[in-house]
Structure formats: structure tokens, C-alpha cells
Image (cartoon, rainbow, N blue to C red; front, side, top):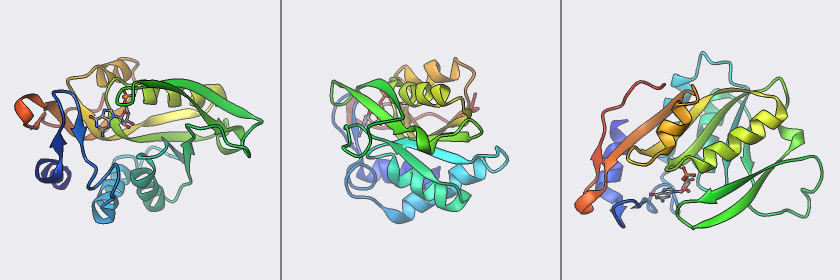
Length: 195
Ligand code: 5GP
């Protein structure tokens, strides 16, 4: 996605050889126009997939997931990272180790919001080592729902997540794939096939 690549180049900050900061449009301040384009792109790619629900993880997956849900006319569920007082029974849970925060969270989704007959599209902001996506996949499996694929805004192609998830035969659509962050510079990979 050209507009996304341009935004990453003009506003992204390379914090190290492995971490890209995109706080001005995705992870803190949100650019609604870009999010709308991202939602449209996911919706176009998955229009034939029979998606009934989008699942993401709080907090930075919520904006792109909601835009896609609006355009695809399906509900959006976000996995919670913190225990909620009102969310205590009938839960699916999974453990997720965060690459950026170096901590493990137990994430959860209420059983009320994923059904066995759902066809799920996972959407998240970043794909690094794939732990967040694996946690979401685990809960979708627990629910017995079907997976349409995984939509990622920014994949770091030099980390292992893409290979890990695609290696399971899962469709992954990344709208920008970063090949390298070395020497403070963002290099992109050409968009590849989704599997
Ligand atoms: P994974 O589970 O694939 O290792 O990491 C995915 C999560 O870590 C994303 O949801 C995102 O919140 C965070 N993350 C991983 N790498 C980066 C990065 O380079 N920049 C930012 N802003 N977040 C990242």
C-alpha cells in the first residue's frame, strides 16, 4: 500500500535495528483517513472470504480493525490484555509474550463473542515474532471457529512471525513489509504472495 509506505517513511522513527515507532498515525495519535484506506484494503482483499467477525488485540489493533469491520459490515472483537471485573466467566484465554514490552500477558475474549460458525479475520498493527497472532489463533481454535486469514498493517519481514504463521498454511496479508531498519533507514520488501 503506497500511502502507508509513504507515511512510514515520512513519520516513522527507527528506534533501533528492530523497532519502528509509528506513534503519529497508528500507535498513539491515529490518522483516521489512513485507517479508512487500510480498512478498505483489507475489505477488498477479503471480500470473497465470507468473514463474519474481525478479531484484534487491544489497543493498537482496534483502529484498523474497526475501519475494516465498518466497511465489511461485521462486528469487531478485541482481546483484552487486562482482567476485567465484568469479564470473568465463559472466557477463552491465551498467553502472549510482548516483543516491545518484554512481558507476558494473559489475553482473553468472552465466549459470547466468538461462535463455532464464525469465519474470523484477525487484524493487528504489527507482526514481529508472531506471538500476538498465535495467541489469537489459539482462542479461535478453542471456540471451534474458522479462520479466513490474518491482516497486518506493518510486518517486520526480518523477524520470524511471518514465516511462523504462513508456515502453518495460514493466509497472511501485510499492507507494508519492512525488510530492514538498519542504519536508521526503513527498507521495504515488495509485496509478496499471501501464503
Ligand atoms: P509479535 O507478537 O508479532 O512479536 O509482536 C506483535 C505486537 O508487538 C504488535 O501488536 C505490536 O504492538 C508490538 N510490536 C512489535 N514490533 C513492533 C515495532 O517495531 N513497533 C511497534 N510500534 N510495535 C511493535
